[in-house]
Image (cartoon, rainbow, N blue to C red; front, side, top):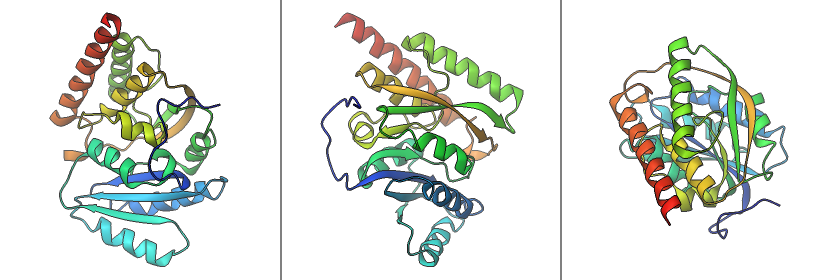
Length: 248
């Protein structure tokens, strides 16, 4: 029996919403959609692929439209943001737009193979959160691996939990993302959401998966001021929550 942190709400007419945020992913989005479709063909779940074009200027949206026209049998939905809202806002908004009981983010740059999606999604219903961690990440530099380890250890120290990896794309109950959606605005949102749900008593399992790292520049890069501020916000939020939990 999956332990829920609150009553179910909204439209849960299908098993799974896969949200695919995109910012200028014209070169990758078609391959991403092919990967999602290939994975879902191996799984017994009803689903929708919800692509959110987050203010792209490179033709990402029209490519998704063309894909939908060419594959009318695929449950593909396109939502366009008039201007860039950022990954966290897009992720939380997608939970309100979706119809699935469960909710999972897939990056628009196709960094996860179909086998990884199958591994994660096959655990649907076994816990409130299915948290993947990377047994290997092709293309990730030693510096980026060290930075990731420092971040993970710091979140664990401040939160009191012992998670392998906080930036994997966890499988959630969609209601929990709507109810406990993070307030940060960059990559720190995943640690904020996971630790908040654990504070609320959510259950979880962790599973090892493989992924590919792709270095990006500008707004899409993990190493920029916006994400530094997001991570700082997340760490402060975790500390305040832990103090409040101990005090009250």
